[in-house]
Image 1 (cartoon, helix red, strand yellow):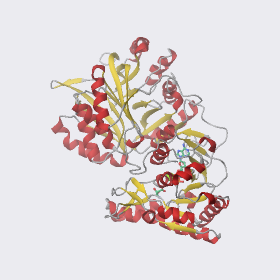
Image 2 (cartoon, rainbow, N blue to C red; image 1 turned 30 degrees about the vertical axis):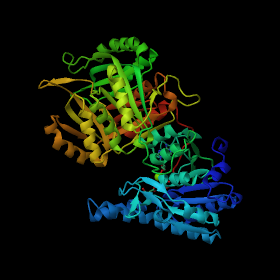
Image 3 (cartoon, rainbow, N blue to C red; image 1 turned 60 degrees about the vertical axis):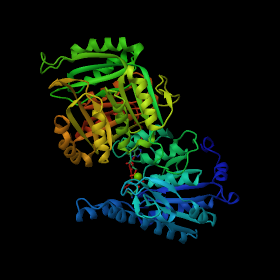
Image 4 (tube, rainbow, N blue to C red; image 1 turned 60 degrees about the horizontal axis):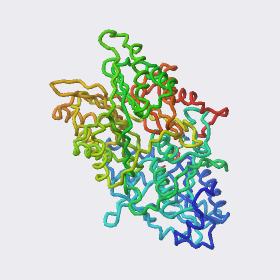
Length: 625
Ligand code: ADP
Ligand code: ASP
Ligand code: MG
């Protein structure tokens, strides 16, 4: 396995700071909360670290707070304040990890292993001054290397850092941030690999707590893992995957309780990035465009289980490969579903849609509500892509603002955590691409969306459930350049990350202005405040009502093998239809399909989809408490 990765010796020579004659490999190991949840478990971790060191390796260990310590600290703070000061939150939460580093170092010393504990500040993990969600700027490696060269195991507190000289504020990276600390340290030290030890044997096809038949995978590409992690698979933090991908850090997730090999996250060859501004350099890697696209929309289809399954089932039977699919929120009891296809197969796609439309007549209002097919030929899809946009709401906002400034109207928006795609008029494509390339300082590249799947990649690698999202909809937003920019600019200013964004296809003229609804999902904790903020500006901007639904769940499938393969979406929708689960929203990107369903049906939806793609194994996993 290791042969695929950069030669260990070469990596160490490049690092220049480690004495080559003394080490076999430099390994960063990270142990999560459950793995260090008791004194006995800390002692077991010490044994594993000791064994790794004795085998001739240098070891840097990153640890989380013990068990549910961080949750306990958050609870304490909330007993004192409903809105605790963020600086003081960091001061409080960073204490959890400090307990573990001291105890683990003592446990190692008891085994006769020289070890030293270090806080993030002592190491020099320098971050932005953004409390509770700081990004790492750079890591000083001198002190670490000195201890390593003296034959010590260095035990570093995960999840924390320090803002740059002058301020010296203790910061934290955001919940789950120890994964990020570990991979960033591995990148900075140019370690041979980074091992994430946790309470499951590796990355599984889905969360084994929800689907015990989930199967362990040997490997997964970093792009797939990035999507899975940001869609709810908390086994790895997406920022950690992002760093591994950007710096080519070999990364493996393994069980703390066994010696099984675990799951490797495969990154492309490193591109020789600077270690300065580690987490904030270049939010966008490239601009892609595809002018060979056409859009088919079905307006006013009934809002009930099985409709998407029927439509896309038929489309798959006709071997039509669809690219983007979006289904917007419903008004009354009907929905709009739109999808894009490549121009050569438009006729076939249109025929399928037209044939099925009469059958999709809305039963409750047969006269008023008749499904209508709308085709648009002269469109182009323009995307910005890059792992650096995760958790940075300003990036999508900047894309929309750039398009608005170039007077380009956006017809469809579809997002994933690492990509934002907009459908625009084909005649505006060149102008839009040029403006985006200037704004994000990048070179143009042809669309990556080739119609051939990657070799040997499963159609669906994994399934994820996210129940921490809320859906917001703004009714009747005037359809003109700049509206999406305005909306997402406001969200970005308030630091609200938007996940799925969908514009309705239906355009209604009210007061002489064409209008569309825009729906998007945000983190549940931001739901109420976002609704309030938007309601305040709605009248002034000429928007309609702002509607919030917090009882939603998002279920997603991810797989690089689905590119260019007809029928994957149909299968997912069919699995939901069979269980009478209504789909409220659909959004896709090249390697994922997400559906919003009601929260109470979330787990059932996950289980149904996992089974439909034959991901279940014969063994059942029981995650130890
Ligand atoms: P740690 O404390 O070690 O960081 P986490 O609780 O953050 O551990 O992450 C491990 C948990 O992630 C598992 O116990 C499991 O319930 C959950 N999980 C969610 N999706 C997956 C998946 N696809 N594969 C494995 N574990 C998953
Ligand atoms: N202790 C922190 C948390 O619970 C960081 C981590 O464990 O990754 O979020
Ligand atoms: Mg974790």
